[in-house]
Image 1 (spheres, one colour):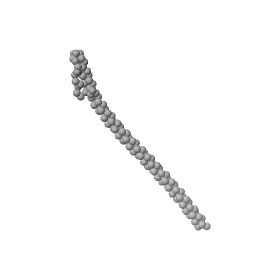
Image 2: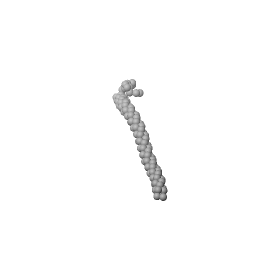
Image 3: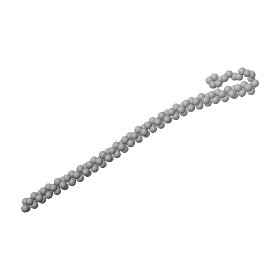
Image 4: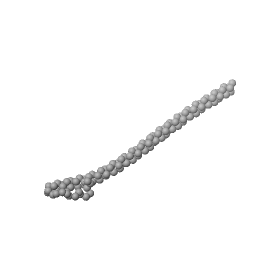
Length: 123
């Protein structure tokens, strides 16, 4: 009888150890799975953040290029405007000078033909 109780206790102890081992194994598996999921989620978040940063940097580079192109075109227009203004100032001075010459011609009472048209001045 003593041996039977001892065998029963050993069998019960074996079952208890098996259940405890299974429970500990399940707990460790669940914990490692949870940690792996967290690590993967963190990596996914970092990956998404890096993708967004890369996209924003590409957009910023595009905006910079557009701004440079607009500035280059504005410089070209300003240079063309300056050249046009200089040419118009020369024409204006030439017309003014010719007008004074004609007034002087008339004031002095000189007969036709009037003085010749200045060279380089559009008619």
